[in-house]
Image (cartoon, rainbow, N blue to C red; front, side):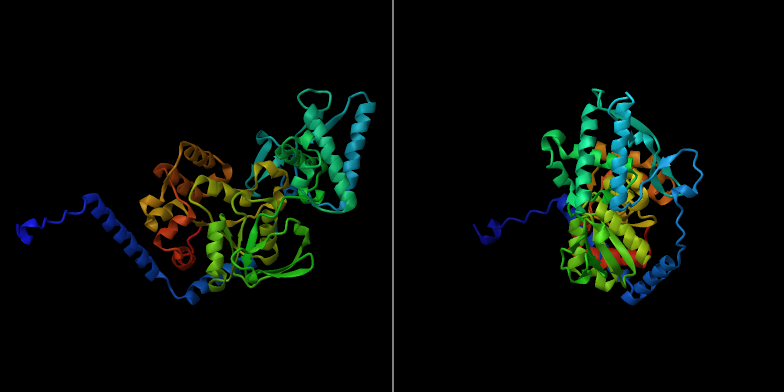
Length: 431
């Protein structure tokens, strides 16, 4: 048999494979088209300077809870010095002693931090705690354990304050593991104690372990040591858990970029994004801790910088952003110190998935739990007052699709820093 007869015709590629290839080429072409839309950096920087100037000239008059004539009494805490907190603890113990002598028994009057006791105040754009308390009696079977833990936490905090030192929440837990059993129990009572004494948790000298990090155009002192955040490598500088040690904040940044996840933070840090577009980049690596929230608010207040946020396009990314902006229900009693108002949602937004042609294989189907979380967010008052948020959330729930920041890496590992963010900044595309 001749070679010509033996040779078989090559099989045609499957139709699905051809379609996928064509679609991939269209997406790559679209990505290149977006890259070509970018203007020179100096023009983008001119727009950012305008945003910076607006933030610098914005009124510094802050409305407080006491300025409002609310029909419901609310409770807030303040930073207090060591001596003041010690006196408050002594006062709480004396109140218990008087209760025992009066025949009412061993009992603490503890503010209720239940979800039903939270109130969103539109004028403040944050969650506050109603002034409602409940009795935590030692003689009651349902509250005896919490009453015991409350007494123990008060004792431990008083000992820490007498030594004028700081300890972590983990240190506190290990002082009486058999009583606390689980750190979540000692942590919850620690918040109760803070609210009961009318002071911030930082005033108790009990802090969480380091979690958040910062990098970029920021210089500050940490317990007297000068820290230059442009020289911290891709890992950044850990945000000190004792924010009272931080001072002398200096910056030539035009904005603060708040990032949800560590992976995106590392990409931005390694690419030195803060040198191309002068900014300070900060992340709490997921759910925000107290120190990061305090640090962000302090930068915003002292440096008067606009804050732009980069989170995943899912309900949990928005929940994390809302904690920075409006506060958490768990710590609503301290929302005046922990919230940073007027954060702009830069991305990744549900509308970006089609706008930037994010590939279908990089989008994730939302679970029933995700959809419920999205619908629950649509019922929140702080979401309802922002039409842009409502529109984006409704799109997310309708399409049942979510995506992480890393989905943008499908166009190239540096697409985030070279195209997506510069184009967002150029178009002032934020909510």
